[in-house]
Image (cartoon, rainbow, N blue to C red; front, side):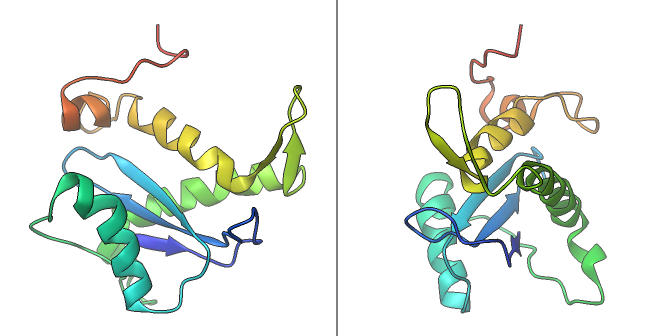
Length: 145
């Protein structure tokens, strides 16, 4: 797991960061937006409220490699690069946009859709989607035929 920080604050919660958590077995990802990252307690609360409360306590946690050795957590680092690229592309059109029905969307609103899309696509190492490996089934998605 690792943080993506320094993003433009958006929404009423002022989200300016998100935690990326990658399951090394299934390759599934979780993107958890957060308004401010100051302490280890912030990270612990996000992890407790979103992962431990639904999945239980993991046996091993690989997190927060040193600045000069990011390869320690290569899986999360690659995911961070992918997510930053997606958000950068989204933000190149502006930090918000209005859809055809007039609703305003921010970078934080695309995180659940990107998470679902990633977790339901076949992964190159497992040959199966992360959702299928993790749960035994894929959620129904409009883009999966």
